[in-house]
Image (cartoon, rainbow, N blue to C red; front, side, top):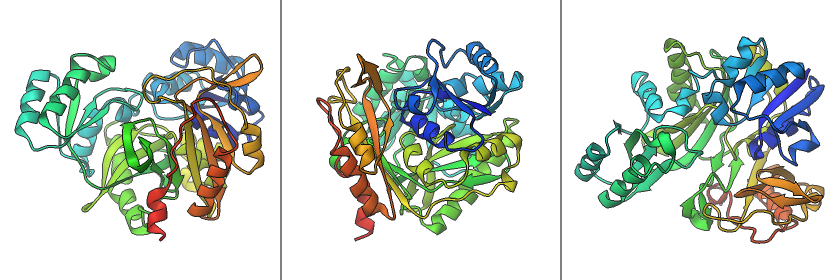
Length: 425
């Protein structure tokens, strides 16, 4: 069948790589894609991923049998509803179900209603009332924009003054536009973060190997928050016992709750977790594959991804066996100098072929082609992934690949998977 992939980042490159391996894939198309995705798919430019009518028209023109949605914006915009209404199968939640990510306020309502463990929180639509609250309550806080903010709408504050500044940035200065019309102010959770992604058809749930993202820009988890500087899987912080608790206390109640809400959830559910002294608690839900977690989880999938996705769409996941490799994967993000602040684009990238020849997978996150050369076109430029028998070997393989690649101002962390390595000492 012909498959349409929506998106243009490292996550989508990993999806394209895996989808291309399926025996069911005749032709892969990508909107808009990137130079890495172009190795596996025909990239279609000139179509906005937030124009549902244009996406449906393209899917009909290309005789698409399955559409796979990468980023959150098209999901929250209802692209799955539009494709389904046109008789085209689409992997991902409906607009109503995607509100789990689209509105942090709604996600908190669901968690409270179905007793899903999360941080205590309050919602505010008035900045003045929010100011009073943070000055009365014990610090620190996580202050979150209600709507989509490209993964950057969460500000951690240590003092009341910092909290007031964060509230004003989101609600008055509109740093993320209408996403900051309401804010969620929640208690800061102590613990270690992890991510658990799961396939679901609205009834059956199959968790993927747990992963851990590295959000801070510099080694030792210092510096500004980013979209993610690297990841690894499986994350040993999620023990078999904790994995069972995540399934019983978080994933199952969420999927069952969404069904009761009249918003059955199909696709990939991402649970961002904090492993606290009292057990796993939800930091956030995403309504799609995580980035950069996808880049370390999909290389461990032995099963046919198209078959798994179709089973989710068709409600047949219980009949589908999903196999995972007994290996580990580590991804190192190579970013533009200055990221997540201001950075320059158009820097020539060299050594990608050599990195791939050394055994690394290289997924393009922010690249373009200019005058026949590969150049930087984003903050996060490349995901260099090592897959090996265990975490230490995968770390070595990933960094061996990184050393082959160069571009002006390249920045990357040198301690990806440090928590896992500490646990193995």
